[in-house]
Image (cartoon, rainbow, N blue to C red; front, side, top):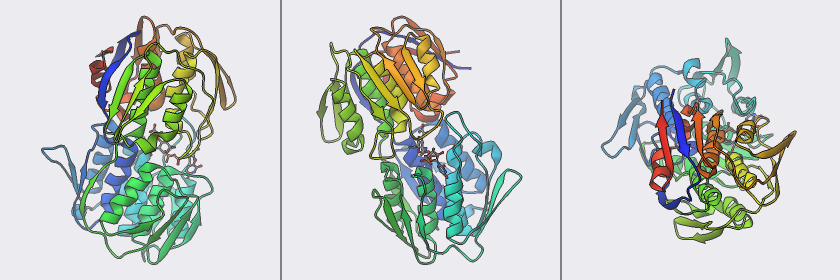
Length: 419
Ligand code: EPU
């Protein structure tokens, strides 16, 4: 199994271009199932999760091509099998986003029920309640969600009891082909949901209010094909900004949506970093600076993203004081803590709160990746630490970071993949 070997302690310097957003591209690829003609998706990151989604779409019968320019073209006209099997769903929970489109377009779907995962139990009850409110019949049989809407879905008013990102995506996609108008309240406002809505509107959907807590979808009878460019990955961008902060370097992250990173930028400034904003780039200068501690509480967008919590913990671990981090989205998202402690971090966990006392240096150590963002925090800790860090189980990183070691290598890091 591949591992990442890092010789830390080098301030990172240079420029890095950010890839397309994982959490935007996955539902956009699934949206092709709603269409009557091919969808061309541009700026698709080369990630394991994308490969899993492509395999799932192929399993369903869509024809998937990769163009010379690495665009992914999905032709839904060959769909013949309305099933998302356990083998694919268990490797990627986001597979659940094929449920809404298949049900809306074909009147039935069988999608394996995702189990719990490393960061929490992650139920999909809100996805199912929303589809039922649109008239679907849903049974759970043999670990599968078996959904029917043989006479089509109907528009409804639905309040999500919790903000759910993929739940909002699923319901919004389903509602595009429902009869009448659907209003989703307490909807997720994440930029990735907005990107999906923009993509669907280009195909003929009538969605408004995306980016606000109330999304309104007027159902249409059919959607055409077309082309869409995926937004850039704000979490990848945030990870590189933190890399500069914890190594005392200077990095320009390019091809980013600066507005989508508001709260991350504000926290880096609070940590004492110099930030310069450009039109679609951000420069962070941490030269000669030790981070100040920051208090963080994760929240749905526009709050502080749970997907940046693990990375910011490394900032607090190296800070000159005490920073408190409260995780409110997932019940088990501190799996990186015992690994960071192996590197000399001083962190105490009390329920959903991690209290980090900054230390002057972390020390390299063999550590184990447990989920995607936890792995990113270990890479950051390894880049900052003195000596060698060996990170095991890096397949988690390959799910969501494109060319991670190449990009860090170009910034001066001594990082390599070893067996
Ligand atoms: N929840 C329910 N019932 C539901 C749906 C969600 O109780 O039906 C709960 C979850 O258990 C969780 C909270 O609601 O406690 C929020 O979960 P959400 O549904 O928003 O998460 P998700 O859609 O499964 C997406 C991202 C995650 C990201 C979260 C939160 C994708 C593919 N995944 O997951 O990304 O952490 O939103 O922002 O978009 C990652 O990229 O590393 C990652 C885990």
